[in-house]
Image (cartoon, rainbow, N blue to C red):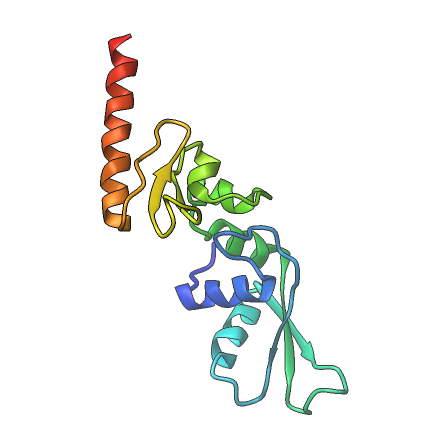
Length: 161
């Protein structure tokens, strides 16, 4: 195994288009101009047999060079990737195709806020869910307190049974 620096490994990983989350290469090139700051590292990778180089296509500048990762470099770059992180439930939620909030996706009964528009509740607020319904109140703070009280009373009734 060759002695490569962390930066050189990152250059090969960049050329392959891989990272911690994307472990399968989808490209294999690194275009560098003559004065590029990474040229010394890229040339040392070529000397080590981990990359190859050739002149750039005619539409690029004359002093541009295209570097490609060899099979040995590809194996080394992939092996140097950190272990993938364990997927969380939130990651699963982001990948799912749903139109609900994270709390609803988890199955949490999120209370809804209702605004009264007819007499006698005109201008009043209450919170309601499948577990409990609070009283109509003048402020949202009072409505929340009423809902919490109704929720604890509902919980006490369920436990008593």
